[in-house]
Length: 397
Ligand code: FEO
Image (cartoon, rainbow, N blue to C red; front, side, top):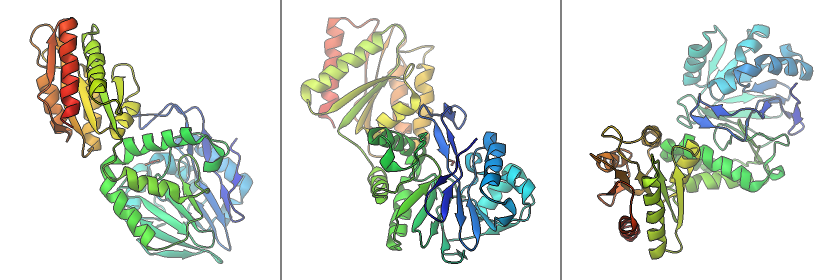
């Protein structure tokens, strides 16, 4: 049973808190902190539903909505983005109120028809279009590629609420819903993970869209996202954070990502880390084992880094598949302004370092060292050479 929550006198949250969610986008995104699918009911002279919830909760959602309101009194539905975690309950709802107009972008029509094949009453909108609700008004702002071509924001006058859908969201289950009622470290850990793993490829557009929205000088009292908390305490704090994250973000951090078969490459990674710290005691160095650590957490560490070292032993003339999978993710995320080099242990043919160097280039990193490899299990001499490689690497940044 979902529990509706009052946001303002005119706005009620009618979404779903999903404490059990473990992965999202198939297995592509880990959601250890769960998530929420935020849907909002606006009651003015006209009644509007903004977004719905993920498909498995469609019946629960509609049943809850019926407790809240006579469904026939919903005048308009606004779908800010057609992905199934927000539109999944739409077919169940439209079975009850099939003629209700659905406001979305032109691409929104495409995605909703593509998913559900419903012959519904779509009203395509574009930036600047408005919808009068009586004492308040909705203003639509297209936000393509934040993060789908169909995405838009909806701004509500009177309450000064920006319904931003995925932007500014987090996969973070919370019963209390508001940003000032949750642990701030946990909130920002989830917010940066969400940005790093979902929005990084669109950073240029993030900056442009935020500048465009800020230029409208609309007062913003609340940002009602579609996942995680509602930003009501200093709501623009997350907007300013996004501007930082969108601007080739990096901290004074080097991340060493590796996998290992018999611990040779792990021992190399640890020696390289020690070498880096001998030269630069202020830099944060983190080691991530791609075979064991959460891939989205590794991506977040890469996002925060100014440089990356990527290591794998050679297997079947190539490198380990955990590194291959991670590299595929990183290529798609199009990180900017990061330096890199490769390393790895080998017994026989030793191709991994050369191949990893090519992969780093394909990821868009600036390779600053030809890479370093050792044979078999590194001995004291080899570990000292690894330290020297770490020193050379950090000096080259
Ligand atoms: Fe939360 Fe793009 O869906």
